[in-house]
Structures are given as structure tokens and as C-alpha cells.
Amino acid sequence: MSINATLIGQMITFALLVWFTMKYIWPPLFDSLEERKKKISDGLAAAEKGQEEIILAEKKAKGVIKEAKQQSSEIVTLAQKRANEIVEESKDTAKKEGDRLIIAAKAQIEQEIQQAKEGLRQEVADLALSAAEQILGAEIDKAKHQDIVSKVSNQLG
Amino acid sequence: MATEVHAAEGATGYIIHHLTPLHAGEGFWTLHLDTLFFSALLGGLFVWFFKTAADKATAGVPGLVQNFAEMLIEFVDNQVKDSFHGNSKLIAPLALTIFCWVFLWNFMDLFPVDIFPLIGSVMGIEYLRVVPSTDLNATFAMSISVFCLIIFYSIKIKGPWGFAKELMFQPFGPWLLPFNLLLKLVEEIAKPISLALRLFGNLYAGELIFILIALLPWYIQPVLSFPWAIFHILIITLQAFIFMVLTIVYLSMAHEDH
Image (cartoon, rainbow over all chains, first blue to last red; front, side, top):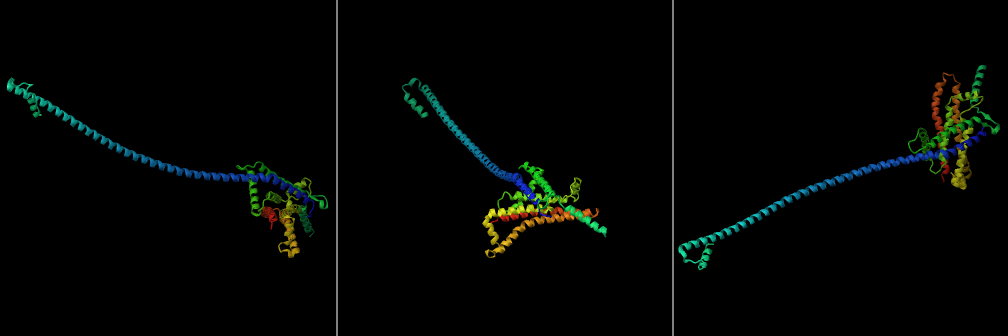
């Protein structure tokens, strides 16, 4: 039970073991632990970030869809408006064209009436003249009584 | 009457035989060869196991060996972080070495008491005591090493004068200097002695009880040695743990500057 030189031998062994552990065992194992901790925490952070990005992207997508819907409804409204306008415009144009045609037709009719009147007047004058010739025989010289003939013809008009 | 005495002598002889180390040399220069051999062997086992783990250490998925080594490393590191607030590259590896080495020493206690002496006697070795922690030399070697570290760090951190001041003026102030000095010296010297004797006492007593159980008739032995062995699993781990934690605490006290 005595204390003896074994003590010194044991102390040397202990010192060697501690030195070896300090130099070759603790650092690599501890570093690998720390590195894994870092890796895991990095991974978790990345996963969280990814999740946040997904939420953000979803929000963005919703916004885009909403905008698109709004735009499309605007476009539809605009198109309807434009269609109405075109219909109105074409109605107007048609009416104007119709009016114009009516006016032109009326003018032509008037003109034709005038022409017919003129023709008739000429004919009547001629008839009257020939009738007068017949009544008066040769007494009436056409050149001599030109004035009277035209007066009559004017009265007929 | 005579036979009884003879039987008692036989039992005493058996116990003494089991508790006598294999030694060489005379006086102070006696060497307990079994203590030296088994503690070196167990130290080698510890270093080999951890070196294997350290060589294959990766930050990726750890293997079985690395996993076990890392479990111990993390356990020791937590203990160090709990009590020690300084920054030291030595203390955590020191604690790991103490815990594993003492645990392996103590673990030798769980082998049947007769198996190694039997193997030894076959090989021509008369005495063999396989549990290094039942040798005061082994426990004192460790606690004195720790004590040297305590003194070294006390002087390194506080300075020679700071350490001397702590010894002289605490806890009762400069007017009670001799009393302070006495108290502090006892306190410091009690550290290695209590560390060594606690471990030695527990394991020596445990081993003695195993030997006593081995003296009983064979049909009673399992009934007693089985629960004692199970209880001993707790004791050997606890003693290794206590030695480690107290080392950490003492060294953290040495690092604290008042």
C-alpha cells in the first residue's frame, strides 16, 4: 500500500496521454463537431429562407394574376365601348349617306321636272304657233312675229 | 477450532493475495508492474479508439466509432463549458483523458476477480492486481498531476504575488494572516488528497467486496455478485465523472482572478 516509484511512472503515462489527446484527438473531433453544427444551422437557415422566398413568390404571383385580371377586364370594357362607338358611327354614316342620296335624288327629280317643263313649253309654243298658223294661214310670218310667239311661249311657262 | 483458524488464514491469504500487486524493486524504487502495465494498456486502448475516430472524422454523417467518440467529446465539452469560463486548450482534452482513463481503470473491476490472476498464474506470474484504481500510486499520480496544474495555472493567471496574496489575505483579511495561510494551504492540499483517496477508496472497497463474495459458496455468489456488479457499473462511471468534474472545477478556480 506504499507510495513508491510507480507514482512517477503513472504520472509520465498520464502526461503522455493528456498530451496525445490534446494534440491529436480533441482538435479533429471537436472541429468536425463544430463544422457539422455549422452545416446544420446553415442548412436550416437556407430552408427557412427558401420557405420565405416561396411565400414571397406566391404573393407576387397573386399580385400578377390580379393585375392581369384587371387588365383583361379593362380591355374587355374598352373593346365593348369601341364596338358601341363603331356601331354608332356606322349608323351615323349610313344616315348621312341616306340623306345625301335623298337630297341628290330630289335635286335630280327637280332638274328633270324643269327639263320636262321646258320641253313641254317648247312643244306647246310650237303647237300654238302651228295652230295660229293654221288659223291665220300665211298671214303670220315667223320671223315677223317672233316677239309675240316668245311672249306667248313665256306665258305658257 | 484448528480447522476454523486455518480456514480464516486461507481466506485472509486469498484476500491478501488478490490485493498484492506484482512488484519489482525495493523501498521507494518499487514498481507495481501490474498497475503500470494495465493502466498503460488501457490508456493505449483509449488513445487508439479515439485516434481511429479522429482520423476518420468528417463533418458529414458520422460512423459508429465517430458517433460514440463525439458523444463523449460533447459530454465532456458540456461539463467544461458549465464550470469553466476561461479559454484553455488544455482543460477539455485533460478532462476527456481523465474521464475515459479512470473509467477504463475502474471497468477492470467488473471482470471476475479470479480470471486475470488465474491467467497470470498459468503464465508464471505470482501476483496480479488488474484494477489500477485500487493502487494508491495510480490515483495519486493523477491527482498530483492535477494539483501541479492547479498551482501552475494559479501562478500563471494571478501572478506569483497575486497567488501569494490569495493564500495570505483570504478569506479573513490581512489581520489574520497565519490563520488564512493555514486554512488555504489545507484547502489546497486537501484537493489532490481527496481526489485520490475518493477514487481509491471506492474502488478498493468495491474490489474487496467482490473478493469476499468470491469466498462464499458458489451457489450464493451469483445472487450477491450480480447486483453488486450492476451497482458497480454506476459507481465506476460516477467515480470517473466525479474525478473529471472536480478537476474542471479546481482548474476553473485556479483561473479565477479575485
